[in-house]
Length: 163
Image: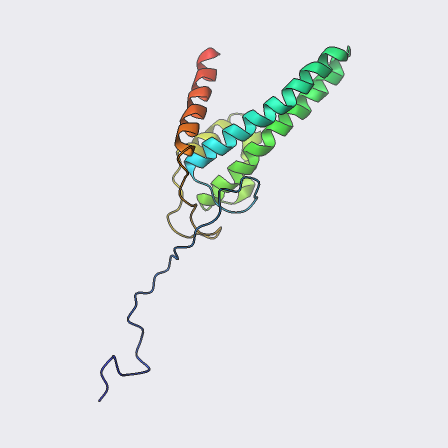
């Protein structure tokens, strides 16, 4: 009586996909939620840590020369290290969300020896393809992300070689 093209109640002929082409705006650095890939994790996390460390180290060096009490200098050193750690924790949370893990796993970065294994997992572990419970996959990387990531990896390698 009706063929599929004339039947108003026929199922749609367009393919229906689970994954939408929508992407997250992972180029925004200071966002708690969302996903970030391996390359951006290295580039953004490394550059943020370097910039934060540099911005804090210069005033710290000046203040440490003016304050004769070394106990206060040590407290300032701990505060400085916590400020440098914050961007790493922020990026690690987003990286873990890309691998469909809870952001609470970033607390393993505070535990000695476990933090090394966690960082290896963050750098080398693959993210989930397509959408996961934390959103759509990260957007494509800009051209500068790959060289910046390689520079950060070379810097980390040089730091280990120097010790």
